[in-house]
Image 1 (spheres, rainbow, N blue to C red):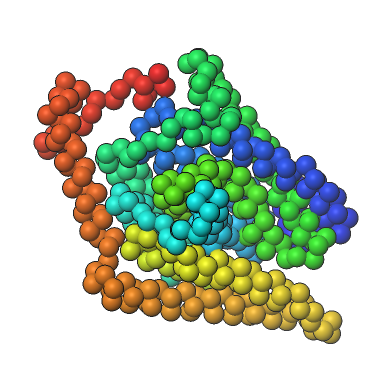
Image 2: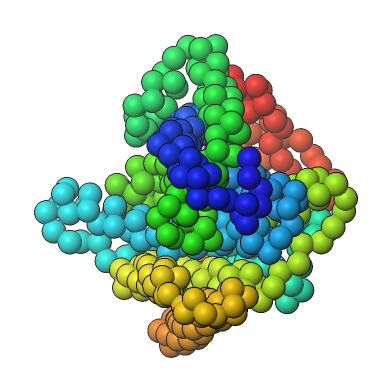
Length: 454
């Protein structure tokens, strides 16, 4: 495997590009198999926990690809490999908001149009419980700003991000369950698995996880190499190929459950929150594994240093996430906001690609050419950061003007008030299943079906 981009010869690039004929479909198939297992398993654990774990499992292929890139960067810690490491996770995160959210909205509109024969969906309304996911995305994205300010990423950052995600899960587990999806609402494969007898059902679920996970681990390396080779053959910068194509192929096949939910206006908020939960997992766990794998590959404890182009990518990603939080803070997602997010996402890719195709005079020194391209790339990123910041300010102003407050905060208060109310009701009606914990808190004793998939 070639770990140094400078050693990628034209012959090696063409050979790697041909591998995309099997690596691209393989990564998609492995992602689908994991998705089937995750969608089936969500019915066998508590529902709040299930949605979180489902979102995390759905991003495993992206974790595997990022892990291979981080390993290669540790083997050959040159700026180009560090750049690919940054490109993959920033592209994956921006893909969720810039393309994932609009696709959820469009799917809801199209199926509602087929059902009602008219355009009756102008917004997706969220439930008050979704304030937890929105807040989680905000906190996770804030730490990205800290990484930008430091200009480094190390194991301590990874530990902090892991703790943040653990806290997020623990908070979700404290919440009362929402309305659960019904088995007959699933697509064919998960529905088939869940209607089998208990032993076969559990065996098929584990088989999906093991087969999909094994496939991802075996294909991640060749998939990365074929993407790099294809970028050389097509004349597309390797950075762009890893930033946009790799996350799309490894991430979106697993979002079939979200798009299936989006067919119903009632389930559309759940589909949107599935995207948000995946964003939280990637802002925390995905970034957390990077310094760990990098240091293991390098053979010692080290810090990853980012130059300004890398920091600008992370800053743009965090700014887009904050904009997404501000948009959802009014507990609705409107059609023109979706259009704006998609337009900014696509236009940035377009200008980035156009800039990469500019042919500089051959008389220029290669170092000077690289400096000019870096300057143009950073200029595009900085312009979009400014646009996102302006939108954030205008969005907050409009929310305060029309609502006189930020609806996210009352929704948070209502969510925790509902938690306290349902726990009191549970204590009164089902006291035999409660255990008294220090501090006066009552929690439900773990049930056998939660721990053993009964």
